[in-house]
Amino acid sequence: MHLPIYLLPVAGLVIGLLISLMGGGGGIFYVGMLTGLFAVSMDQAVSVSLATIVPTTLAASISHYRAGNVKPKTGFLLVAGGVIGVIAGSYLVTIIPIKALKIIFGIFLLVMGIGMVISRMKKQDKEERSDNRQLEELNAHESKPISKLLVVKGLVFGLLGGLMSGMLGASGTPPILAGLYSMGLSSLEVVGTSVMVLFFIAITGVVTHSALGTLNWLLVILLASGTITGAILGPSLSKRINKNALEKFYGPFFIVFILLMAVSMFF
Image (cartoon, rainbow, N blue to C red; front, side):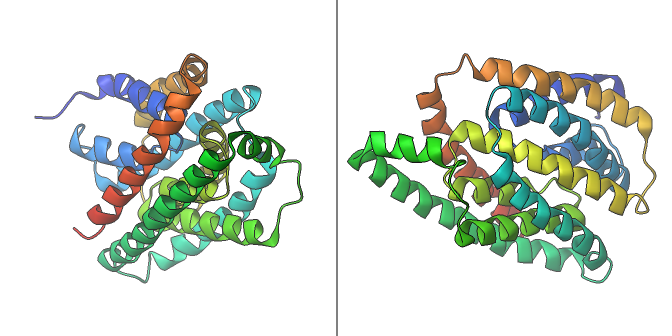
């Protein structure tokens, strides 16, 4: 039994709130929801997902920018890699079997998940030794010159996010979140900056995937009406959430999320 399409705005609202509060573009959720709950064909689900990500991440980006959660210098490093990745991924998907692609990305996600665990352990160790010093470093992060290592990290993780979007029709959320998290941003900064990065990746994805399937604008409008509302409400709700509690929940949540995504790639 499948749900009627007029319930898409409700489903979109829930996803919009989640991605606005937790970061990401929601592509993985959109595709799974459209195919599993609403009986939409895979090719339409991918194109609708990419089209819906654009207004959702735009609305969330504006809201998070006004709230001071976006770090543009860091974000545009990932955007540069992401745009290249989407274009390359759109070409690679025509010559590499989808099963092989999933295995490749499963390995990538496992590596990133392990990297996030190590990064989190190091961060906790630093916080225990000097909470004040860590806070000063986080606040001054954007004003300091970006090191070569951060440039490489940004481009590589952005490239992986773009490749994931171009080849699998997803938003490329896991690599983007892992990259921003490993670059030392706070939880709210990771959330805000990630939606900005994914906005640019989504635009490129829509253009490069436009020839892969027919875009059903009715589905886009219904889904986007809910997701945009959720994306706008999310940052306002985040102000009422205890930041320390969010910090404790955020890291473990996305580590588990990325590792589960990695495992799912092998099936």
